[in-house]
Amino acid sequence: MTRERPTTFAASITVEPHANSAHQEFEADVEHLCADGVSITYRSGTRLESTVLAIDTMDFRVHRGELVCIVGPSGCGKTTFLNAVAGFLPITGGRLELEGKPITGPGPDRAMVFQNPSLLPWRSALRNVTYGLEMSGLMRRKPAEKRARELLEMVGLDDFIEAYPNKLSGGMQQRVNLARALAVEPELLLLDEPFASVDAQTRETLQAELLRICKQTGVTALFVTHDITEAVYLGDRVCVFSSRPGRVICDIKVELSTSRDPRSRRSAAFIAYIDEVAEALVTGSGNRGRDDNEPRECR
Ligand code: ADP
Ligand code: MG
Image (tube, rainbow, N blue to C red; front, side, top):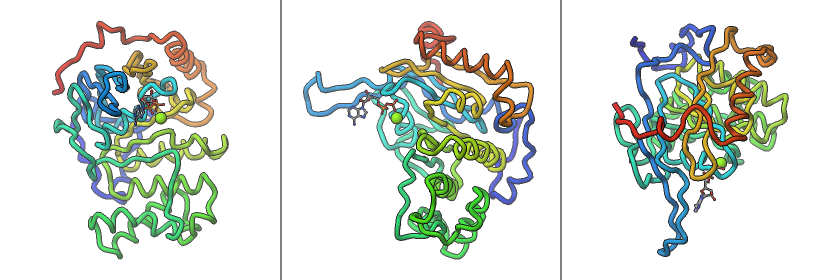
């Protein structure tokens, strides 16, 4: 199956959502991100005892258009893995490839959304979103502003386009943060506990917005969260990491018979997925035993 990747957000709005998917009908046969036996070690100083093995021979696949959620105990290497995929951190073993090419550093094909929005306080919402486009020279000012306006409307901030960060709530700032990441039209969106510091109600709204935006843009997403309900609600797959050193102990394909809306969280099928993820977290084991986790070649 092949599908043209939408090149503009306006064009992408015509993409038909897939009723049974959190996201959209993704190209299940097209590998986007491939980790083969990836290890990541932190070294501070020269002494051996000052090394920390954060990720251990990890195998991981993400297909184009998927939204994959990662959950795992604190300190298991979730942020480390995301940083390596973003190209901020080198791997120390194995292979990490995006669209068949080794990741050797950051690039405009990936964008990261951190837990803390860290907006520039002296720039309006609009100018925070245009910042990356202006700095990278990807776009001239006028078209960059047009794009930023569309994105701010897309994340529901129509009335706050000219507002400065100190006039925006935490949830609104996180929307600007998301719009800023989407501005460069990344192929892979990396989200590290992006909704962890907003209140429960705003969080639910942002989750729904994210699902809608992913459908509209066709972006592939890797979403780290501590919240199992959030992971099952958003994810086409939920991957559970072991405690450090991190590796995938459980990889669950979430197949719900109804489309994702807040009511689907009360269904028996949804609760069964939550139990499965919780069990893997508590026992530290799941459907990917060590034997099944042997490194395989990236395509
Ligand atoms: P998570 O995001 O899953 O909570 P991290 O990826 O932040 O975990 O960290 C994984 C492990 O690596 C932790 O044990 C942490 O202490 C360690 N670690 C993270 N950053 C560094 C660093 N810069 N130097 C040394 N160890 C680090
Ligand atoms: Mg983290």
